[in-house]
Image 1 (cartoon, rainbow, N blue to C red):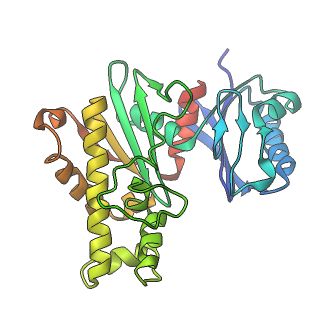
Image 2 (image 1 turned 60 degrees about the vertical axis):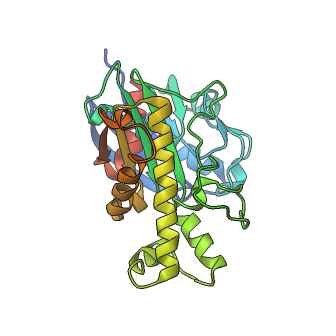
Image 3 (image 1 turned 30 degrees about the vertical axis):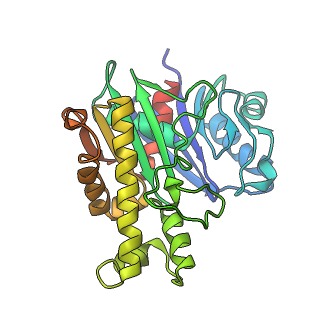
Length: 292
């Protein structure tokens, strides 16, 4: 008998629930994530699972976290959830769920795109999400790779920024997220006297010298990150997602072309560069593949 599968994406603002039949979503629900009263949010998840007789559940939530055991360690946007074992609570309170797999959103987005673009065993998919922050996921032989302690692909602080920025905020000098993310662009603009968000910085690229310099440095930093990934991992699929990437494809495309000048040409011969097509459902489909 085929088990009933659902996926839940717990975000800092909203929680999304999806019920699957085969490989299709047949029902979606969205509700607010309670930043302090975690029990209210988890009880809504339990109720949805029991109502729809869910047996296998894929779950992603913000980190840092111990995803193997389903435990949030600390997440700034959900202050009441510190040291909370989500997996244990749902298993103990649901009448139907008997299996839960947990992972972070970038990793399951990578898994979703690996399958969406028809990759399988023997294939390597690298996924970058460029949004408020910069995240990544790696899939090898249909499995998410997270390293020996779960920190593989945590690239925000990778020292691949193109110039030294002494004003590092919560990051470190050369942290690539400062240069190639929405929040990073906004922070760097502020130190140069511009109170602009990422959308406004991109809009002023052709008319404002500071905005142009910020974005050009972002392109260079992203190019270095792409070239490094291709050299180390030899992926045959490289997918870009996230709001900044989706709305500014030229930014990513420029970085890809520049990356090709930063590494040996043969590294790029068999790499298929794509933009994600699953949109907001990417994490949900990835969770389905994780738990099925």
